[in-house]
Amino acid sequence: MSEDIVMQIASETLKTMVLIAGPMLIAAMVIGIIVSVLQAITQINEATLTFIPKMVAIILVLVILAPWMMEVLQNYSSEIFGNFSEWVR
Image (cartoon, rainbow, N blue to C red; front, side, top):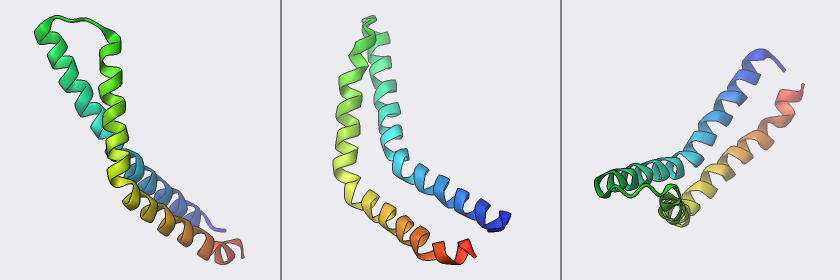
């Protein structure tokens, strides 16, 4: 297995990881910013107040995008296992 193949596999792995985790992280970040602005406006300084909205947003994104995420993971897994015999040589 050459260094080029290893770098290609690592690149595809990172790309897939960002595609899968990105929407949930973006949703949590947006909700966190919105709740922080509301806390600043109302002067409520409760650190645990952002937890529930973030969890709800992450669960909603996960429920909505789960079929797409599974398709991305299935394509990635098929590519990895399908090309494994070529890479081992």
